Image (cartoon, rainbow, N blue to C red; front, side, top):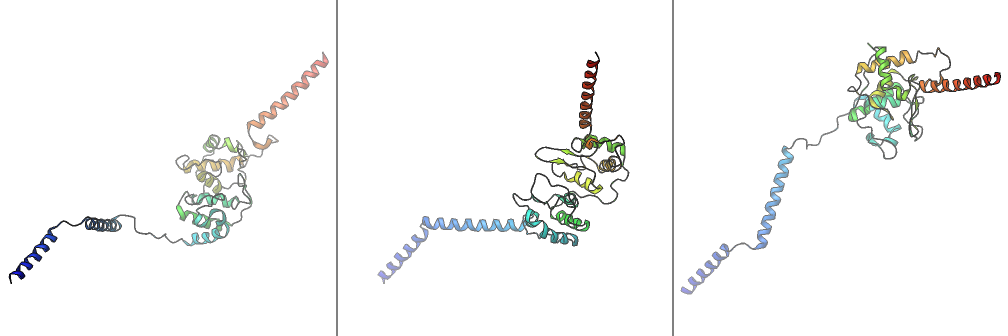
Length: 278
């Protein structure tokens, strides 16, 4: 009986010693890893639950006009500008954020779609109707926003004198004083303003196509844009060159050059005539 009791006390003492012994290094590492994983999972779940903007947001559906524009875009524009108008490297830029004004200018003037890759898209008869142009513009507008040409009379309340002054300050350096256009660098040019409509001029000022700077409402107010448009349409286009040959309507450069050559020739002949008489 005594030996049995001693044996039990020995087993009990060994069990107590094993329980009181510190855990092994492997167990400690495993426990630390489990606690770290649990903490990371808890933190990630809390961030997902409470952080703003992490929930997936669906793109809003397109309006009817924009849906029609997307159908036209997928047929005629996707080759160069890519799916969802995000651009294709070496072919065409992204259209996200350019706004309806840029599309209206390029498409209504026939510059887009381009006939071929070149330094500058030339004006040509438009491929799309006015309604289709508006649909394409609405589609691009709903992709990323951007400037829009306002509706209504774009010359309302315009001041021709102010428009002429603004035109000479901001536009004549490239488009010449008479709006006939002129050559720029790298094979580009400022086009003639003769065929441009009110909306095309307004859209060009908002979007800044090719080398043209952007004239947003911070640079030129809507009233000043109306002044410029009225001056172009009512003054420049109405001028029928009463003085005779217009010399390309490039302004004082060609006029001064012509006067110089005519004057030099007249002086030479006058000098020769005087020399022959003496």
